[in-house]
Image (cartoon, rainbow, N blue to C red; front, side, top):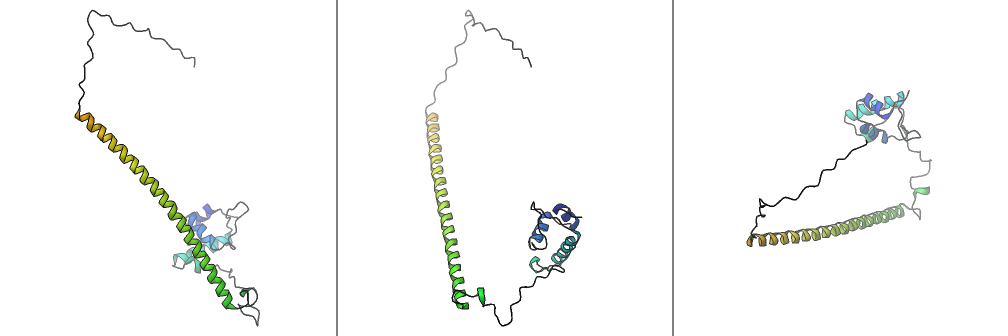
Length: 183
């Protein structure tokens, strides 16, 4: 019997997000199905219980080891070192590997600087647009203030509408039309 993420989370008493975070640290132990969903067997549920116990006891998830799932690094054949074969730099020395690593770090730093510079430039453009909008709004408010001040200074006398004379007939109203709705 297999359980989905929601059922497994409920059984463990944790949120689905927490369960997915735990599982993501062990992609080989908890594979996804062809639709990208996790399905947990009883054995995997036991592993999840172990993870839960270890995390609750204060062990970081990176330090949790699943029972029966120790993956050891490939052993180095006798007589070879980690610096042999494809582990070496272009000329075969550890120094050239370190040099290459430093070059890559510089490139990453340079790219990060370029990204930050582009973001700052974009923010400056947005700020300038906002400043221009503020200037336009301030000008419109000032114009309305001046117009209002001008109206207050020169009051225009209101004239009352002429009263209807008693001997004049009011114009006849048109008869109301009746509207019938069919539906």
